[in-house]
Image 1 (tube, one colour):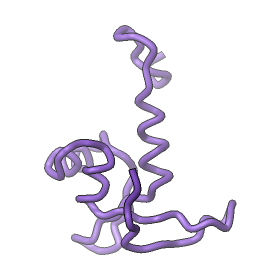
Image 2: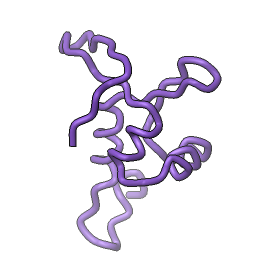
Image 3: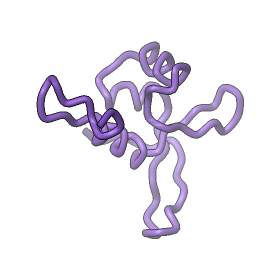
Length: 84
């Protein structure tokens, strides 16, 4: 899935730009509603985000991908590394 970034900044470690996605783009990438994404943000369960101002929220692609990777499980009894 490819998205057009709304803004860009440079990752100092790699010198490659990391796109910033708005709520709609991030929700679409994750396959959830914007409301679900907001609920996750409010409860601290979603991917890390950047608050550029009070209402201007953006998500870095690498943070979204890292969050998704952290949700990988091998079985229904696997609670993840944090719970181990």
